[in-house]
Figure (cartoon, rainbow, N blue to C red):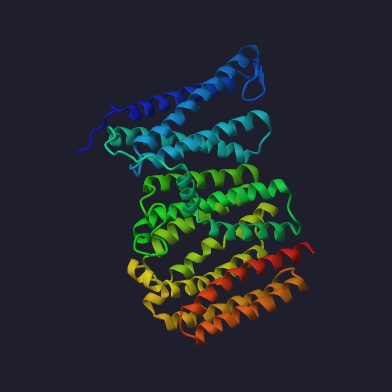
Length: 440
């Protein structure tokens, strides 16, 4: 039976950090109540004026010291508890929330912000408290003197592993559709600032989701030739590390969108994370042959995020972008699943070729491709697109249907792999056509 103990340095540090955050909260309240008696202009340091000014300066110094303790807490969790699936991810989440909150406090002091951001700031405070309380308890129960001798890190390999953890090729494709939503929503090329924050937030949430997915699928990945060399599956990275990196990236990405873009874009991005991680990765992937059909909605959300970033709202055209990717996902991924059918069978994943056979999969690829092309040709009727898009949709549609027809009629992996590659280029070019039409 586990006993509550704070004998290790890490467990003791969690208590000190908890106490420091309590003092910060009290100090912050005192500073806000006395703000009329003095000022402290500048950030992070300032020249204090009056009693309240000195109190503000002291509060900022306390924040800095607590930040150092937070970094020590994160290093301690990684150094001594890299194999703890609770301690490391929880510590990483609390630390990133603290630094986000600190940055939010600086914004509060330097500019007039919306009520929504004030609400987010307050909500983050409660999240930090809840996370810290859970961390103190977890450290008391789980923190023990390190018994595992973790190998020395190869920094170059670790950098590559973190990059691979994010599934960069998928992230790039999602960012293309996000940018298309930005352009189409604003019917013009967006500003550099809006583009930067939207794509940065999108890259972090998409990459973080990919990392969490690799944590969830770590045992499945070991049984598949395509994924056996992934960082977690191969053992180069501890599962707790992968989960911590994924959670940190997702949290940071959502907050970036909320602070620098708008709340609707942040909310949609959060929906995409939950859709991919919970609905697809945890609930559908290993249970039903319809996993890709239903789970495809996760990859269809990024263009809606871009649209919301540009307009602050979601209209019919944004839902059409969602529908295009939703219908595109099954034929694209089933073509890949035909090539990797033995991998999925060995891992026990109920993909369509494994459960219903290759012939039925080829038939479904053709059916979904016809539906996808039909939808792209209906878009000009339901939305404001012009001849550039219409001509592109017809040409690209003919190419894609021909590729799907070859998959239907010709056996073997070669045509399926060609369909997979062609469908990837199809999506990129159809969204490029939508962007060109929007600005021209």
